[in-house]
Length: 367
Ligand SMILES: Cc1ncc(COP(=O)(O)O)c(C=O)c1O
Image (tube, rainbow, N blue to C red):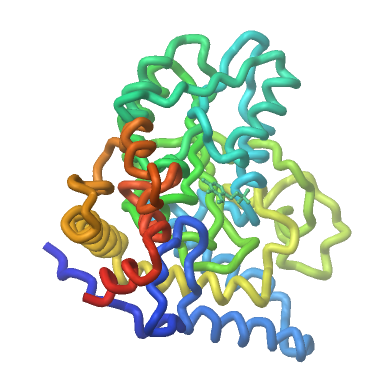
């Protein structure tokens, strides 16, 4: 049993009268991350101190750290700026035939929908959103729609509108049974919930770092299963080609790529300002341990739910950590006339708390 994670508030520049819990929107940057980013940015003031090795060192470091976080190998990770970019890579590689279906969830975040709509348009396939289940059990609803017509399942780990969790191991197993590719948007959970690619066996997982991964905007990762690592990237940049470390040989144009998922890296991935910041945040998360982060968040949400129930006179528990979402009708009932929970409130992320009146939130946070 690991020790509980004590408060880490001192690592963030958050004033005492602010109770910020909305990491599912974007997290605050740790102060060490800001310092690392400032040092990274300052390097560009003196470009003569940057040499060829620097184009790779931090990129490889963040690749390896993210791999560790999802139990992958660094070879399986590409550096991307966004979920939409990562999903565009996936959509550029998975073959879909006319008449096949791509399964998403109703009201899924657009970055994990538009790439599939475009692929479907090109292939004559159909994007089918699984309707929101009345009982909030997205996993069961999704599994009920899996059949041999499905080419791709494009899902989040945690629905961005209601926070409901999907059982990705069960979804992965079902996808493999019918030969469907599994593409996961991990941005609402990676950094906050344990995630193991060896157990889930997804085809692609895309995420930005600016939510629970505590990173800056325009940085992210794409996990690419080994079976796709010979694929076709959407852009052809110089640094993704084999031997790009040899700056003197760059015009010896070559068809081979760097090893593993690196062919899917975005151009200019040697981001001298932001990579050190991402590195610092990933090191912090790994130092904490995701299981401990998860346990700390869960305990906090459970205590907010419990006290909201007792102190805000709901009469019953408005939010709680669970695999299932609150039924839609229940959210409507709770929100009537006041806004302790919203249509985007959630059991598994903290952003419901944003909707509490600030004094209530601060009171619950501080006590
Ligand atoms: C579930 C989810 N996916 C993706 C994103 C961001 O998409 P992108 O990285 O393409 O900007 C968000 C932003 O709020 C989100 O909530």
